[in-house]
Image (cartoon, rainbow, N blue to C red):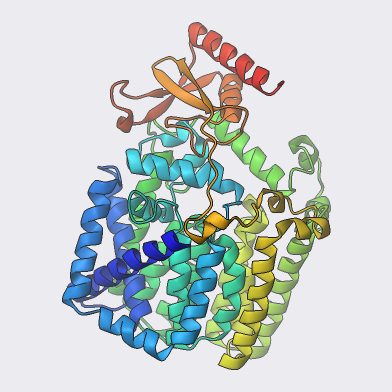
Length: 546
């Protein structure tokens, strides 16, 4: 907890300094207050680092100048007086929320993507920046979320334990108190479940709620609203509904000119460029708009990935062959009535959309109508591609927020916040208790118990067992008897992908054998390389026998 507190003490003034500098440079504010400048700092640093990552790694050479400049602006503009004034006026609530956030974020990470996607992405960004064709090495790395770029930039010195989400939650609590948006305080305990990992789910939920609050409050700064909505989309493309909403709001309610959309279009182009560089196509993981780049992933692997995503829609309870035989009714029925907790989530999702649609008809409010249309478009797209609950979890927060927007005062919200915080803290401290009640929610089994060392540093897992292999011009590592490469030295390939490459008859190779940063391509294996891969897969199989 002490380390997270120190991280917060370094990063928040840095973001404030940058936010103030960017507001002065571009003569525009995202919104008023400390939280507005902090959000500007996140937005600006993230965009700058994304551009830099095309050319250099996001290591200490990037982090230290960023921190020093931010702190220089922080002290030069005497922004510490703003923090002092805020904490003096809201001492009790801000202290309690921050303490709860820091405590909960000190637990072990448990989200599986933390080990298979977040940590490997951050490690690559720290060592090499954005690597061309990285998806040929490990398809999931082709995502390289902007949030992982932001985390990577602070992970060498200020945040080595990767608790940037804890800092974001503290910033969110500042926004809630500043704006007196008390309903959002009720969401905070639930969001604590995302605080142990640099999960992009947390920022997109938080930023979408902030943006919604600004829209419902009548904010006319459409230049920011549209650009920020695309920034959220660039963090996680399943948030497609936000750019749709902001565009509808800008054009039909505020009557903005096309000129106000330019910053947003720049963010969108940057997002496309980042994806093309790492994945070969503009939108991960969809292989559309083929520019013919040599570093695009193998078509057979993309097809396999698409099939796996469909199986994940049904929680791997049906094979791809079985799903193909489903009738239209089977597709819906089997998704709604999966075994376990995910069935409850799916049914709740459908019911929420139905209730919100009815609510929209009753209210006959143009903004709410646009929100409903945007959510339905997003939901249809998710259902068509991969209807996993993690892709539509934000919809629950949005619907609750819009329906109960005017019904919560400070007293009610603090009571609910306190009650839910006690439940979440108890759940995190004693996760095995809940396993007995929800055995189908498998992530519970990965949650670590409270340890005394958490009082000074957050808990992290270490494995560091791997084997090194060579195929063609590529020397790579594979984690020993474990499916993910969360602390395996790069370049690392998951064991499952080695088998996929063998089946497809291709294998990733360096574009330049003397410079890994120049990227990877997929190449058809020679007979010699096929023999090398066969030996490797046999060795991997042996590991799992013992």
